[in-house]
Amino acid sequence: MRCFCCHMENNTTLKTIAYARNGHTDKFGIPRQSRDESPIVTRIVFEPDYSVAEALRGIEEFSHLWLIWGFSANEGWSPTVRPPRLGGNKRMGVFATRSPFRPNPLGLSSVRLLKVVKEGGRLELLVSGADLLDGTPIYDIKPYLSFSDSHEDAKNGFAEGAKDYTLEVIGLPSPPSCLREDQHSIPREVIEDISYILSQDPRPGYQDNPDREYKLDYAGYTVTFVVRGSQVIVRDIS
Image (cartoon, rainbow, N blue to C red; front, top):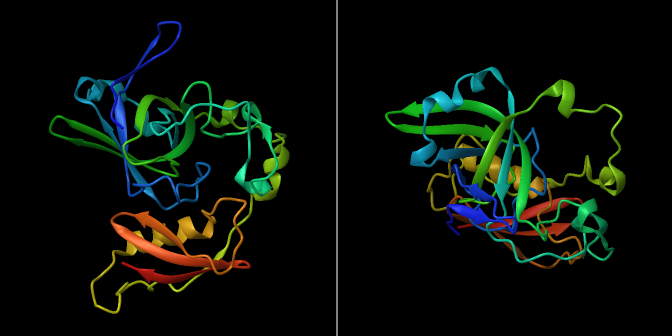
């Protein structure tokens, strides 16, 4: 979905300054939170009106950034939602979650700045840790400040149990060759990205059938897998 502005009820207009570009072409498999350890690289590609080098002056001095963006695939809002990490059966208030089903389709992500790309008249930011669909509109970018944006005594509420939750991934081709049986090479970074996505358990929280096959589309590849216990078993990559 491509839109250049979002009109709010009070006549405020949000201008799209950039779009996110990465391998997440489907909502299934997108990380539920922005995570600093994620290997997935996202390109923040500025629109021509905002591809101004002076607007990024000083940004390379910061290690992390806040991205303010829009849920371009949002489907309306609900006062209560079912957080996946609670099994998908328990309802919580939407304002106590990070669900996309919100009154205003706005998202906030903390990402690591890897590189500023300046080539001709084109400006891009390379970031890691983003939980964004390919083509997500970016409305604003702000520096992350550790002395004000991080709170050592913060409580994580019902999300605490998901903090260290990961699964073991079995059956992916191993670097450095990353070859399938037909000998077509799969880039190392794609294998690493897919491994990370699967380790975070992309299934809906209410699905726990060990025989059910799931399909994940990422960077032009389709991964077929099952989840049994604490393991993700990859059956095919095509």
